[in-house]
Image (cartoon, rainbow, N blue to C red; front, top):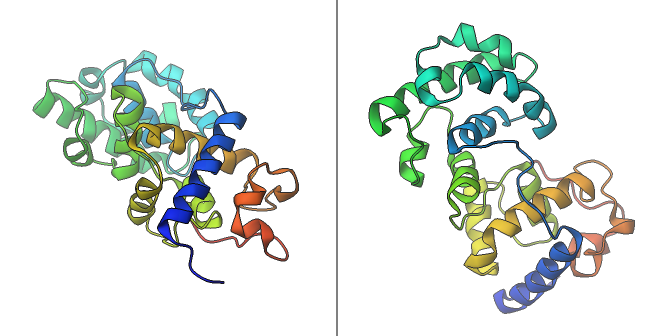
Length: 224
């Protein structure tokens, strides 16, 4: 199959974007939060966990630790009971308390609004930082999680497995003003239709613009 030119791929990306907007017109984060601090905590907890599971745990957690100052005074062992239903909770409790202390020491307890400052916090990688920047501060970012990476590769918008490289590939295809929606739209499509196992290609409205959909058998299941 000949390599698709960037201009053709951008045209196809435009049609996919229109399809995603029709499917998920109100797409936004499914994590429950009221403040940038709560979003940061919820996003750290969501790594290798479901948003539903995180949303069940965070109300009690936020009542006990409503801001960075409160969490900074806690020990990881005190936080663990609130998040023990979430995977990797030992490490996440350590990271959250350490991050809270740095927020107090370096930022007066406020969540910073730059990628560099966010990724300097324990447990905060580029994806987590991008989620916070987009949803708490309205900045144009594309956070690449397992769903975004998988759908992007199946659509042949990227051939990369590294999330940072997938992000750069997607940025080339979509206008900056669409980046936040692209992130949310691809996540929802990955959860509801283009699943890791048994993707529902037969009912996918994006099928005509998806090279994987034309392949015999199910689309390739790349490791995200």
